Amino acid sequence: MWRAAVSVRSVLGRRALQAMCVLAGGALVLTGCSNTEDSGPAVEKVQGVEKVDAIAAQLPDKIKQSGKLIVGVNVPYQPNEYKDPSGKIVGYDVDLMDAVAATLGLKAEYVESAFEKIIPAIQAGTYDVGMSSMTDSKEREKEVDFVTYYSAGIQWAQQKGKPIDPNNACGKRVAVQATTVEHTEEVPAKSAKCVAEGKPPIDMKAFDEQSAATNAVVLGQVDAMSADSPVTAYAIKLSEGKLEKAGAAFESAPYGWPVPKGSPLAAALQKAVQHLMDNGKYLEIAKNWGVEEGAITKSVINGAVS
Image (cartoon, rainbow, N blue to C red; front, top):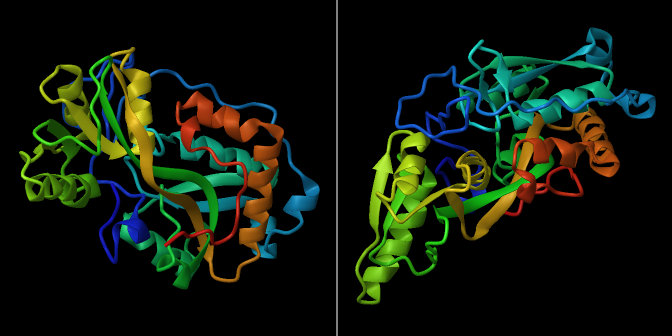
């Protein structure tokens, strides 16, 4: 979900209270979620990530001496960060941060947090860095620095072979997860445009959990769904060929890791993730989770587009 604030673009990159639930075999089910979720298909950890001394040397002394990176994270948000059945925090973001930490000669230590408390805790020195599918926005850059690592937007999905145009879905049934920006802004705006043009409105169906919204498409109860691009990509990956993308992702903006303003940690993280981009490990991690479409080739510090 994208948190609402100044504008859609300035705050995109965050989700509702619940995330997609899946069974171990990859089948989507109409069921409730808890903070401990079934993990879906097994995802192999990327091996062979070694410390790069020249990059590690740029770490702040306090972090260097501790040997660990304290990471504030909010779950669940599958596939980026969520808990497996044992209660361990896992996901695409976790695998990438683990690889970045290894490059810096550190061990990442994940501390669960309310989403809205992550930036204040970073400012207070409680966490070294945040990792929670957070969009790098100009508004947030006033409080913290960001290291970009991914590009996310809105992505629609449809039943395979039953095309839907996200820009011309008047009269169609579209599933969304309740309280997301797709529910509160994106689909309502498209529906209002339909009405203004004398066409039938979009019949939006809001579900408490993404799993139910996804399943509604699989079962043909709706014509399409709209969700954040990594969520949709993972749903398609787990659908065993039942779902496909409807159009291209749009309204894209960078996800970033927030760190204290002016901290040398930003440069160390940026160089570490860029190293993984350059040697192919970054893309390997993204492909493992089926989210490679949002992969980027250049990480920057403070790359907000709005």
